[in-house]
Image (cartoon, rainbow, N blue to C red; front, top):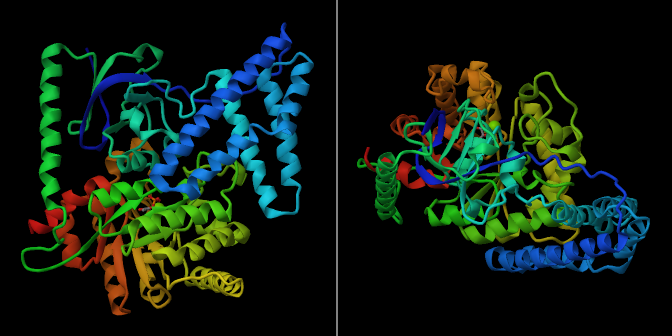
Length: 537
Ligand code: PEP
Ligand code: MG
């Protein structure tokens, strides 16, 4: 048996087979093939497989989120039947070249053609062409879509995982994550938590293909990863896992109960989500609403910007699912560790202190306006609130409000129905906390992002695994900034919540209540745990 230690991201236990995750840097190469007819058949087979996959995706999405979202897979299937596209691929195959190269050539030709069109709808089809072509290429090359080539759910072990890679993974195929590197404050760790999966980062282990298929145990309570444990230890871990599941079941009794202390102090407990489907988990956990929808996850793991229509459908779906419960959607927070190729961001010396979040939105308003249009259009379908990340000044907030007003005017002229939307900001820089008295005059609410507030207050890079030991989230400086923010919010009659990971830290629940925090937004898996902590006070 081998035993490794790492930093635990979620307290839980997973037992199962290990899957070594290989990075997918699949590069298409141009080669000549000896038998062009066989290559044509290989392409035709791949197209058929892609169509079967798309039909399955259509059915799955239809039942999970409805026709509006599912339709895209039907359109993709039709695109794969388009004669012009198939002819373009076959033309290259006719020259005796390999199918991957032929598909990529056709993809580039069509994507360029669509992208150069004036019509916005047709322009957006460039992304679809890339999507279907990548699918066919992956099938031809035998590269699994989400990187996990396994039928049974597995413990995914990787060197490190980016948020883009994690967001693409199918939760049903994963029991736990273990990474060699990585920090527990990274967005990958946050994603694991939102998927309610035990996870360990920074194990520092020597890992590779040889782990594939071995039995592993992830013990998130003790930060341990066991590989091929002896039968006796395995039995003990199975017992402890059953105990953990039983404890979780006991928490279920708190569903439907109020978040109130024995002396009558109430607090809202909401959930953080990153994807449309996560709203189901929030509802299942009996969250009072969504306190943070990290909208940038809609931008990750894809080849091109999500269109206004795609975003509108996603926000609408979440709002409809949540009914009369509030949904706080954060505008995109791209940059730092959340990298997306199509944003073409330059390499930076200090990405966390760099061009990210609202800074990008104010500098490239066309991206911001597309998102705001989608958000305000979706507002008609539920109780939406919008918040803006990484604010440092009053001037930024005023500029944001100007753009918001312009968007609302345009939508009104175009006849789109909209509802009242609360506008808030994240307090995640010391600057924002320190001028929260002035900022409170400008907005309807504050949501304190303790993950970034910690990194900027303590000057500790949240991505740097070496600094975890000095990343003291209970540091008095951070608690003082939270207290100041809440006090200034209440002076102006607005509410203040916490949506960073610290909100779920039950050692601080009493402190937050004493400070007068109005809302805690936590991963769905922590909602009932925090409710219990509140009720025990
Ligand atoms: C935070 O910084 O606390 C926060 C909630 O935002 P993110 O973790 O996405 O940066
Ligand atoms: Mg943040």
